[in-house]
Each structure stands twice: as C-alpha cells, then as structure tokens.
Image (tube, rainbow, N blue to C red; front, side, top):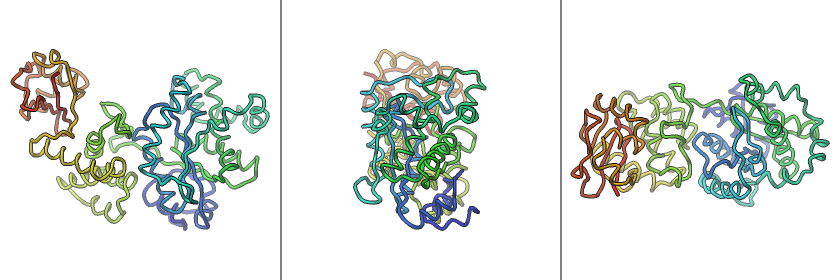
Length: 418
C-alpha cells in the first residue's frame, strides 16, 4: 500500500512524523490498528543503569501507540541481557550478574514512567521481564520446540551475523542464539498478552521478521513487524553520540541542564525532524519552526530543547535549564543549575588553562584546548584567552568559589577547586 493510504491513527501518525522505515503486512496492521486495540512491544536490554537518547525514538514510538489507543508493552531483557545482542558489535558484550541486571531494570523503569501511562486498563502500558520464560526453558526442550523453525543458512544471511563474520570477528554460539531468543519472546508475548506487533530500529529487522514468521508459522496467528529508520544527524553522525559520550536519559547519569543543551545544540537541518520524532509539538507548529531562517533558528532550537526536556524531566527542570543556559551564554550570569565539576585545588590553581579545560571535559585533549584558545574559542570567566598555557590563579576563582570555563558558544563548565 502507498505511504499515504494508511487509515489508522497510529500508522498515519507514524508516517507523518517520520517513524516508519519497514513494515511487514502493512494493510493487515493498518486494519487491525483501526479496528481495535493493538498491543505492540519493543525490547530493551538492561546493560546499563540508564538508556541513552539513541533509545528515545523507540520509547516515543511506544508513546505514539498509546496516544493512538494501542497498548504499549515494554520488554526488559532480563533474559536476553545474559546473552547480549550481537547486532552491530565486533565483540561480545560483558556478562552481567543477575543482581546487576535487576538493578539496571529498576533504574531504567523510572524513565518509561515519564513517557507512558502504566496500569491495568486496556491501553495502559505494562513492563515485562523476558527472564520470566527464557530462563525456564530446558535446553533440549528449547531446541526441540523452536530450533526446527530456524535454518543456519538463513541466520547466516542476516546482517547482524553476516557483517560480523565478514569483518572476521568471532561470534560465540551464545550470541548466535540471540535471534532465536528474541523470536521466542514474540511468540510468548503473543500467547500470554495477545501482543501482535514488534517494533524496533532498522538494525533489528532480521530479528523482528524471524519473530513474525515464528508466530505465524507455529500458532497461525496475526503478527506484524515495524522498524524505524537509522537515525543520523544532518552531518552524518550517529544520533546521541557526543564528544563527552552517551546522552543518558536518567538524571543521575546526565543532568537536565546537559540534556537541554544537547537538544539546543542540534544542527539547524535536524530541528524539524527532531521535533517530529522527540516531542509532542503539533505538526503545524513544527512547520512554523522549520520555516525560520538565520538567527531565528535559535528560537526553534530552544523550543525543541524545552519540549524534549519537559517530556523527560518536567516543565520546571526544562525552564530552569533554559534560564541557566541563557543566563550563562547571553547575560554572563551563573546559576546552580549549570554543570559543575569539583577538582582538587592542586589540579586547578597553578595549572595550565588547557589542562583544566580538558580535565573538566570541555575538550578532548590539551592540544585541542590550545588550538581552541588560539582561535578565540576558549574563555575563562567570559574572557577569551588566546594562550592555552596561561596558568590558573587563585584570583580567577569568583565569590561563589568557582571558575567559569567555556569552549565555543555551546559548552560551559563551572570548575570548583576543593
């Protein structure tokens, strides 16, 4: 069916806002979504205490499903995390203890509660740990019941396996089983919770199609798959990757101010796309922001940062982050909401500016800091310092006990010598 012929609110919204890359059985899925409540799931492995912004498009897709009258099912991979998804990886993931996995799941759940309404109602979200069934199988039982539905020939043809082998990187038999486990997840969810839709990123297409096929072949029931496009920035970079590392969703890993700044610093060409994917701003309003030119684009970026930060951290935190950023970069004032790092006094007072900037995470190396200074982009207490070798003095510490360092027009850090 053509992209414009969707009838259900769910698929029409996904299409209009840019979420759809591939769909299995689009006409059937559209009819099911229009006729009643579709339960759809996305799986998230618990490899860290927080998801990062690279997972946000999947969280937002579950939000769109709920907004359209569907039922979002969040699968935490308590079982699959023990194996590790080999997709896009050249090395096996480190194996985590059961205690660490459960601790990560508890931490991650707090983020989903910001985007989804959980409960017992027909469209309320639920969170399920796939360890409930995966760890209950006996090995022989698992192979007998499901191994016959997967051929090694086909598994070797999927990108997650083929690309790893082409790069001559080893893949353990443990990882090779991941596709089977994810497919069985779909079958179990269909049987236990009437889940008919699995969603994920485009790199999961092979795994998703395998799950759809398994449900249809074994139980002869409806099952659908849908993936989002690979998300990159306008300059071709990977979404959510910065020089400072991952953009975490939990406030314990990344402050609301830094989260707001991430969106504020989006490339001009990405603002409209990000508004459609990562905020609830109406499309008409997005179009108005997309039409802005020149310096006015900065207002669109602030609107993006406000809306995205409000969804995750709340309106109050978003307003505080914006006020802190505008005060620091536009009026030269300081706020307790600004990112602050405590460093031993001996590593600050008497040290080179370039070294302190690097230690504070503003630059990747002393050499980069010196080059930035030569170009006029490194500032100490709002004064451009051309010499990165300039020594920090005790008099540079202000009345609040901090030194204000800035790299370019977007990155700022308060350094507190202790």
